[in-house]
Length: 156
Image (cartoon, rainbow, N blue to C red; front, side, top):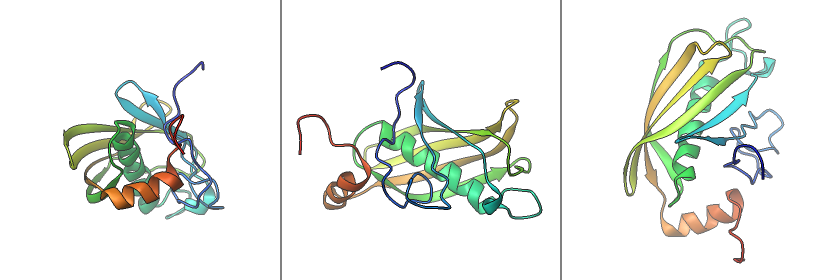
């Protein structure tokens, strides 16, 4: 296969961040970008907060989603967010294409620290975040794998 490797390949679910079945969802498609993951998105009018600007909660969701997929891309159990700290640097207009990056900063087994950022087409920083994540239990992992991750070849 040519081109970057897609991380979130199973999208037939309603997750607001990455699911294709949520009619107003972000539908973020994450790809490997070196040690990071990257998605490109153009926020739509439905995500507006103040006039013509993307709502800060939607920006937060993009950052959180990027960090989660960065953790997932490294293997192991799926994570849930335990802490999210955001720095908004500039307003993000709706209708402009942006890149969302996520990377793992520290992996301590069950506990992970990550970083994410959103940049416009000129590379200007719009927002950044740090987050803490904990990997879920084995039982939850099995249930979520069936719904959100592509089964590995040769398994059922």
